Image (cartoon, rainbow over all chains, first blue to last red; front, side, top):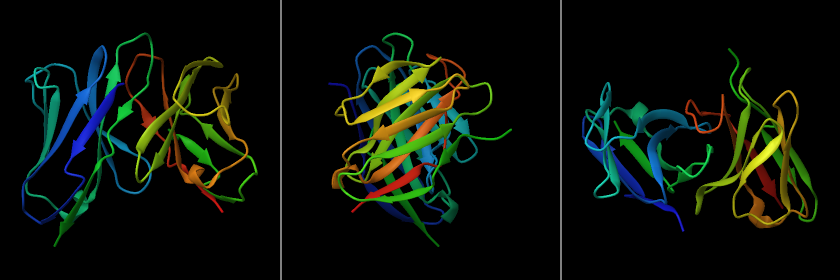
Length: 113
Length: 113
């Protein structure tokens, strides 16, 4: 059965810290991995990774995919209180034309001032 | 442009009742997917629709059903509600299947008492 596992489940840091969130996947016919940030209700898109070893960056956030290790990490540098959220990792299978996402349970990040 | 709109925002129902949730996708988007989010299970895929046809279905009992209309709006129905159906129900829309640009709505918070 396809699955995505995220760690840690929750994390408390102070402003200015750097955090690394982990995501591992076991998905048949894996196509891509996506990261989302969920602050209140609607998850918002952060990154999509399809190629191994290529880092995607957006400001203080960056992410990289390791297809050999079936994993991805999301790094946040110089954290701010506004980074407090649930970070979701999701994998897409390639089987047929589908938008189905297989999500991990998420990492709850709390950034304290 | 308007985002994905879900109604109602909140809902309280009694065990045994049924409920219908609505999702209006971004204009021009033809694919709608539904997810159930609970603290213990994370986001779990319910089903996806494209051009009024169900294209994929998750591992949920037959009490969960859905449909899509010719204007791409989608509804999901849960019959014979159970306490365990209490969750945030999210829908997401995109232009086509197998593509990207997946946008989530803010969800409907269903509480079953």
